[in-house]
Each structure stands twice: as structure tokens, then as C-alpha cells.
Image 1 (cartoon, rainbow, N blue to C red):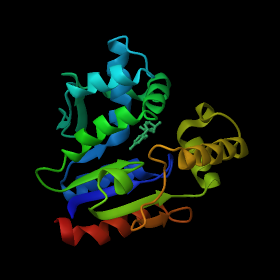
Image 2: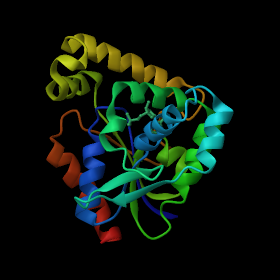
Image 3: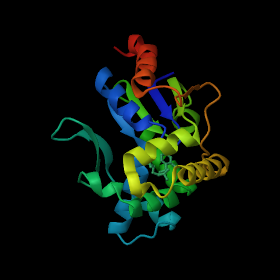
Length: 222
Ligand code: DC
């Protein structure tokens, strides 16, 4: 069994905030694997490599540095290509590149190798879409965090306002369509591991979700 807390789930389920706060409360590294897909797109752009050029992306990943280090504020942040790309990874353009590159099996397998090397010195909390199913199938804890499309749409609107892309009903419909696409794609589909605990937090506050999971893991980790 691996000393890993795997946090998977769809977007806007609250899983990133949860994973970050678990890391702080448990004093263990937080690995946000979405950032690694984004950094792949970011580093490729710098090298003029197209986001669908599978062999070139795989070759790039073979000698690209990608590791989590603590930044000047003491937070775990991805260090890639000898830099902290930080906010540059958050643009919609880079998100689109990450999504495209993430469909390529050779890219996923290079990132898998990097991700599997990240728990060598103790416990980690790793967040993504396929941590419990593909990256750490032997993780000691696996949670699949989800909420109804309507509730996730509400949260996205509260967070992003006009940028969320429409009315509550429109955003909820887009989220439901993306869920279907993500959970039916052939490569690493978004789905809970058979032995993951599914936490549907549609009717839970953020604090309730955090406390529920913290109480399950704290004795093993602290
Ligand atoms: O979680 P995020 O929005 O930062 O993820 C960016 C992209 O990477 C998103 O399109 C899904 C993909 N991704 C993935 O396929 N597998 C992961 N473990 C994490 C992210």
C-alpha cells in the first residue's frame, strides 16, 4: 500500500481546495496533477511543439524537470523547466492545451512516471482525475469528491461570475456534458476506483467535507 491520499473528482467539486487544506493540516506535500498537464502545454508552447504532437511531447517530458517545491510563501508549487510558472498555468489557453495533451497516451504515461516518483519520502495528498484508478491504485486512502451539476454550476458562478459562461441552467448543462465526455473517454476516464469512497458534497458545507475527510485520515498520517 502507498502512503497516498488520492483525491479525484470532476471540476468544481471543491477537490482542489480540499486537497490544499488537507496538505496544510497534515504537513504533507500537495500534488495537483492538473498543473502537470498544464505545465506540459506551457513548456511545449515555449518550444513551439504542437499540443497534439504526441512523440515530440513525450520526448520533451523525458528530460523536463517537474517537481513540487515550496515557494517563498511556503506553499507547494510546481517547479518546471527551472521556473515557477505559477499563474501562467491558469490561463484558458493553457487549460485547453492541457486538455488536448491529456488525451494522448504517451503524455499520460510520461506524467504517470513522474507522479509515481513523488511519494518517495513520505505521505502525500495527490489530486486529479485518475489517481485512485491509474496512478496509485494501492493508495491507502481514496476519495472521489463530487456534487450535482447544478450545485457545481452554482459554485462556479459564485466564483467566476460572468466568466462562468451563462445562466445557472446553461452552466449546469455544460458541466453535465463535460462529465459525460470525461467519464466515457477511452484513455483514463474520470471514474471512481472500485474501492474509493464517494463523497457527494451537494448538501454539505465546505467545512463539513473537510472535517469528514480529515477525521478519516488524521490518525494514519499524523
Ligand atoms: O484540474 P485542471 O483543470 O487543472 O486540469 C487541467 C487538465 O488536465 C484538464 O483538462 C484535465 C486534465 N487532467 C487529467 O486528464 N488528468 C489528471 N490527473 C489531471 C488533469
